[in-house]
Image (cartoon, rainbow, N blue to C red; front, side, top):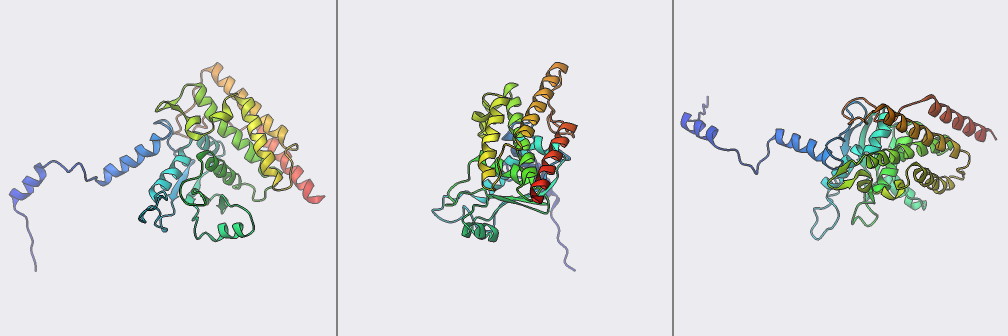
Amino acid sequence: VLVMATRGETVTELNNKRSDPTIRGFTSLTETKKTSEARVWGPETVQNKDYKFCRFESCNWQSFGHRPQSSTPHAFRAMQLLEKLATDPGVKAVIIERELVVGTLGEIDPVDDRLLQKKKEQGACLLGYNTGGGMRIDVKLRSDDLQDFLPYNELASTLIHELSHNWVGEHNELFWTNYGQMRVEYLWKHSVLSSRGYIVDGRTTADIAGCAGLIRGGMDSILKAVLAELVREMANHGLTVQSIAPLIEERCKELFAEHKKSERTGQILGNGSGGENNGVVSTDLRNLALAAAERRAKQNDNE
């Protein structure tokens, strides 16, 4: 039997010493993670406790940022970017509105992803994909030359695109109606925060998200920007925006009316820590709009 012991004087001496400030304990790491998650968008915008992304996964198996002379962003920066997307006030508004829980938000492997390579061979560009109706969403974060990340506003659009696939797999009118309404909700959230003077380190959330130019004229500018985006995207699938434009406009009117009502009644947008919907409310109008788009999509399939 081997018995080991430490003298009482040694134990007392160690207990009386100050902890090394350069060494972080597990509790400190947990608190640091929570702080860093909220810092990008300010202390009021952490993930909702019920509707959220549960896990994050960067592409850490490619040794990005470890090689000598490499300017490729490190995997931990990719992880920070994924967390930034998840806590984006606009993304949060969309997720809470639809009561979504996404299992994993991950980074597409820009080197070895088979689906990505297949799309490149076909002359297409894969920016993201949704697996299992929201069980996992992967987004291409890095540029083709791997020297930097793609612009943040493009990443946010891609994430919303993939969230729309939670309901509709095909790129039909129903999908684009839902996507367009989600984009409106995203931009409108940033517009409302800007109008209320919500500032993070001297910048609005719209500036941080790279969408300030799209919301500068309020809801009218948002509608024009989203419709212009839909024209480009839908053309790639042989569709036109005219059939769904009224439904996008109705969603704009609905959000604007809700905002005016909240101003009259003195409501304040929630801080996202609970189960509130951050001022974006589900209504019969939205359900009717999506149902109408679905009917038209079925009619087109039968023709």
